[in-house]
Amino acid sequence: MDPPLTSKRRSLAEAIREQVHDGDAVALGLALESGIPFAAVHEIIRQRRKDLTLIGPISDMAFDQLIAAGTVAKVIAAWVGNVAGGSGYGFRRAYEQGQPRRIVMEDHSNFTIGLALKAAAMGLPYLPTFTGIGGDIVRGHPRIRPIEDPFGGPGLLAVGALKPDVAIVHVQRADASGNAHLWGNLGLTVEAAYAARRTIVVCEEIVPDDVIRSDPNRTMIPGFLVTAVVEEPGGALPSSVQGYWRRDFETFLRYHQLSKTAPGYQSWLKEWVLDLPDRPAYLRHIGDAAVQRLRVSDRRLAAAANFAP
Amino acid sequence: MIASYTRKELMVVAAAREIRDGEVVFVGMRLPLLGFGLAKATHAPTAVGLFENGVIRDRPAEAFIYTMGDPPNIVGAIACLGLNDVMSLLQQGRVDVGFIGGAEIDPYGNLNTTRTSGSGSMVRLPGSGGGGDIASLAGRTVLIMEHEPRRFRERVDYITSPGHFPGRRRGGPATLITTLGVFDLSRGQVRAVTLHPGVTPVQVRDATGFAITVDDSVPATTPPSTDELAYIRHADPEGFWTSERGKGE
Image 1 (cartoon, chains in turn purple, red):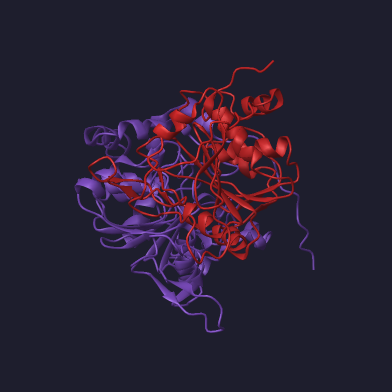
Image 2 (cartoon, one colour):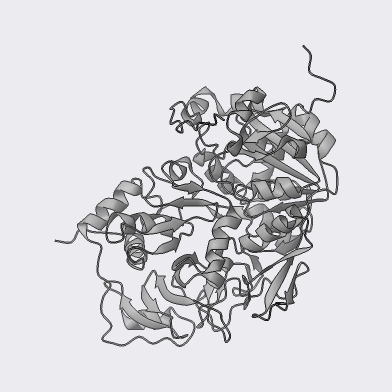
């Protein structure tokens, strides 16, 4: 039977075309160093989106690539760079020199951006916290204000809600309705999917819905919150996906070296994004040997959980 | 006989020694990833580690990791939660000690990892990550730094991770581990506790851009034991983090 017309399944290119618009606030890289939706990042660059606001806790290399491609007007994040190497050179060129364009930075700590997304996920205007008191991040911050404790305790900070237009998350498996199983570190994946107006779930594999229903505690995003479901194996490389892909460390290091100069970045961009039509082409370009090395073939299965009534 | 060791191996050992058995540790990026594993494998077998991506571990990863999100750091974890879950435990006061690094430091232990004009033109740094949260909320913090005059400044341009300040609710910088020595910051001033073997008080004063207390009688940092070195070389077999020319700088 053909899928119904209302099906959420899309190619990655279709999902980006339909869900990510110029000027949108896009949350991604939410699990921190794993499950970064690089295939989506590269497709956003290929489709030449502009004036985006990027939202994320840390953003291992992905934000740097989007910024250096000129797609970004504003960044709301706790850390922007390349985790193994340090500074993100694309981010620095944009922030320090306005190249290829000027960006506005809204600095956070991991917890304040976590609370901002959590507040939006909870339908609240803000959440209170003690983090950051005594430091400069919270001083004059557009989204963080001092407040009194109505119960008479010490003063707090209120972190205002942050509602992304779209969240892009990479998960291990989902059904065609977008009910998504994710395991390993979660970071802010769940908060962002709950908070966002639209959510794109990119998965390693689409599975029948009875697989999802067999283990509902592993459903981190219920499908009714999901706008589009994309099956894109290897779509998070070079970041890891537990049980599917190891971290492609050399690729992170090579980008860090190449992106030191703007021409170096441009040569990376041409070879790894603009000259490749899609993620299968990326996997062919890294080569069979690399794919074999990075793909997880071992099995280390969790014990089964009995859900019998 | 003491085997030869690198400066970074000594820093990992010094970091590990800051963890007491039974403590809950907020493990930072880079050298602390190794320091936590080393402490677990030696003197602190019952310590528990929280990672800001949501992972909770009570044993070190079985294979080398570049980042806390690498698959070996998930295998054998006792829980994989979210960032807000582990940050909540930190805010509640459940974390005894946290590790943070910085690009610049002042005498109060304020760290800057956001932006600096220290060398003339403005340089944008990556930002806080979880550093500002650990500095604000952990029971005590251990800071890890390269010891250079341009990094040790009377005033930092931006306080990313707050040090000692009046009205602080809890915690604050306790120990500073640098490429030259181990320093006490618990009383809001920087005082040398040990200098790494071969390092002189003059060298430390010259490398510090503010007044620092270094007694001429300050002892040497105890070098890594054979067991400690064996663990580090097992956990970082290619010296990515710990060789003198490691890529993980």
